[in-house]
Length: 303
Image (cartoon, rainbow, N blue to C red; front, side, top):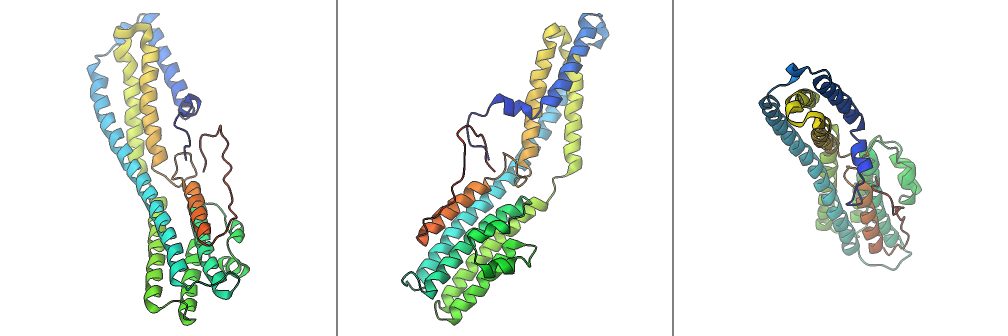
């Protein structure tokens, strides 16, 4: 996720540096043919690229909106995970009778809450395609670690363990039937949020749609210098580069936003969200240990 409001130009234009180099060379070549070799037949009416840019702008606007919708839905799902995680910790803490630290019920409550932290971290790793089973040992006991190693979907395995422990709590009389139903509903919301994130992750943005927009943009840039030669002369080169940079950046922005779980600076800030969940839930069980995120002052993003 981006951390600072003032993002350096080096980072921004680094995303389109190869495109700008190609556009610059192309614009210089066209301008030299017109100004040096006096091939005036190269000039075309400015109305031609104007019509083309209208179509390209509409396509880019539509794609940007669709990409942002995907990104915002992902962020909404993780916002729901934060809320439900806090609700889960509150329900576990209030439904199960208060006991002194050190007995069986206290450790049961602590493991249920710490297991929820592990679920959030494992979902983060799963969506980003990382192997995160080994990093779960700071939240889970040996029994849980042994059980989740038998599953391909670690977050789903943790939800299953939570459900099994709810049944144990009900059989032991620590919660009543209505409390079990409420806690199970919370687990269902976790499952629904996970499914929504996986749907966004696995639903590929139409490749042909992206290709058509990119080809339309390239065709506009190819026509652009020919329509500016008579107006700007040698200044055609910087004008073409500036206009092309603006449209390339908009296109790149849409490309990055359409995949919010691909471990990029524009991703949904899942690492930061997991840190918030861990901090809040550990305070519920009076756990003072907290793994701090190392964020350097000169860093611009963290994943």
